[in-house]
Image (cartoon, rainbow, N blue to C red; front, side, top):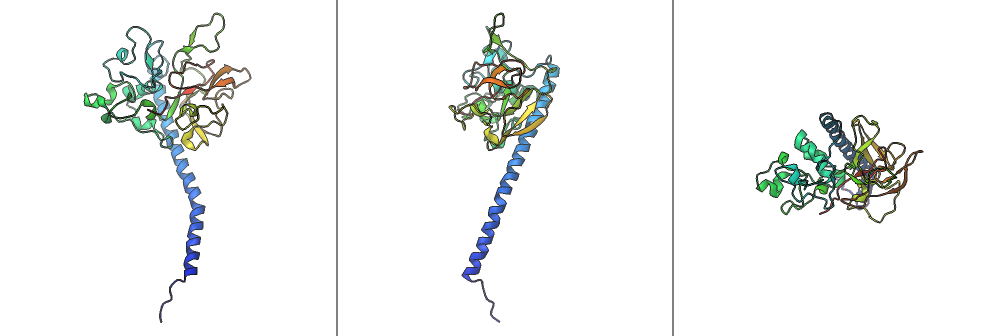
Length: 301
């Protein structure tokens, strides 16, 4: 008996059913993929937090801060002398306070504690892993532990440090005191100490106000989430190295503080007149020890 094949109508029905099933499955698959990326990024942050705690135990209860005493946030977004024999030369601190990047503070964990550069990259952020072999420093014989940052503005590698680190870090540098009163110092630096509140937000996904994907003119808004996770929220790491994903909110600091802006500390909780950072070397600073202000280098050359 001759076997009958599919008719055109039957074939179209099968194709329509497959298309319908794919339409139903794709959102679930994408959500599963996004969740997996979120978990990897959270694991990265937790590992970084644990290393920071070890660093604090060995460095008088202070967390990583590059550049030496009184250092400020570099306006360039990178260290011109990122591979030099000593830190004074690297940070320009021979005759006074040096300038350092946010990433160079985090790089201390790579330099002295063997943290892999891959751990600073969240794939959802689009960052690239720093590889010393791709840089001109490697041409001169430098190894990963010899340099002072995740690259400089390198003619060989073609990227800057902000492109190699997906995370924001609580502002570690000296800055003009934005809320100075009579008798207070002209500059302020609220270095995170080991004995402070374990609920202190220390690091998180990249600050959206300092992201090439963002709009620098966008209004300050509690829904200004990081771009690493489809603007649906951000991983936040606390002083005890615990990490939590906050969905569609950045007011997660002590007292309901916006972690990506600085402002005066409201006794009833939250930032008053919160202001976003404008870029590398922004000279604003937190309004107090409980004012979380997580910043990152810009991720553009």
